[in-house]
Structures are given as structure tokens and as C-alpha cells.
Length: 170
Image 1 (tube, rainbow, N blue to C red):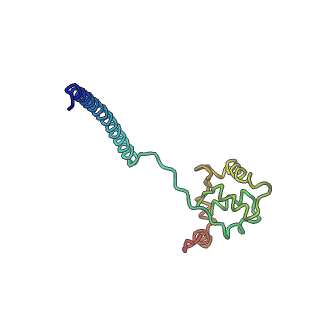
Image 2: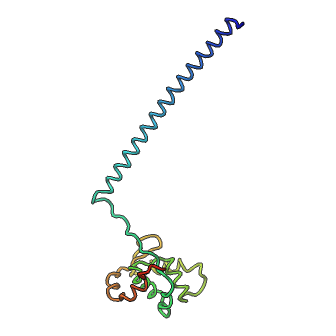
Image 3: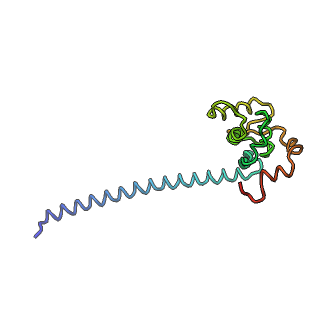
């Protein structure tokens, strides 16, 4: 049969393993408690931030930009205009906002550009930046300063209907 010393050795190993198991359990429980405390702190921070943004004196957010200008028929109306006049007209059509990427597509379609097309976006950006009529509102987007006046004088219901058709196909 099994000797008493073998049984004693196995009991000692079992006791040692049980002690290690208890030590590990305590260590992981303390680590888990730390992580749970951090999660609670982060959740409180998120709650405070969401409450702060709900208050009326919170920082104003940037206005949402209007949808991109549809290109189908607009390029024909830009032919013969100078680039600055074309940018002004694009802004009027687009609620006072000019996006450089939209202007680039319209310039190419209308034939208002010469030279390398890769330089066109930066050229349009610099025209808008240098002009006193426009102010930068977002990366690649500029607002016509006199947009309210221009919209009242230039935009006619027919042009607004062309830009944003009731069918929504664009």
C-alpha cells in the first residue's frame, strides 16, 4: 500500500497549493475592486460631462453644414463668371456655405480652371481665405459673410427648387 510519508508529502503539497490559491484569489479580488472603482469614477465623469452639455450655458457647437451641392445643372450657370463670383454663387446656392471639394467639382465641370487639377483645391482654399467676403467655419468650409443679404436678393424660389428638389433625387 501507500506509505505514510507519501500521504504526508501529498497533504503538504495540497496545503501549499491551497494557500497559493487563496493568495491568488485575494490578489485578484483586490485588483478587481480597483478596476471596479475606476469604472465607477469614469461613469461619474461621463455623467457630469453629459449634465454639463445639457446646461444652457454650455459651449455652442459648430453649426451643421448643409448637404453637398448637386452638380448636374449648376455648372452651366457658372460658365462665364470669375472664380470669385462663382464661389459667391455657390455659397448662395448652398445656404451661405462653400465647401472646397464642391467648388472644385463645379469649377472643373464649368471649365473655370486651367492648369493642374491637383492644385485646384488649394487654389480655391486660398481664394476663399484671402477674400474678405468669406470666413472659415470648418476645415474646407467657408461661410459667405453677407449670406443673409445675398440669399434675400439673389435666391429665387425657382433656384431653391433646382438645388433641393422636392423629390430628393440628387
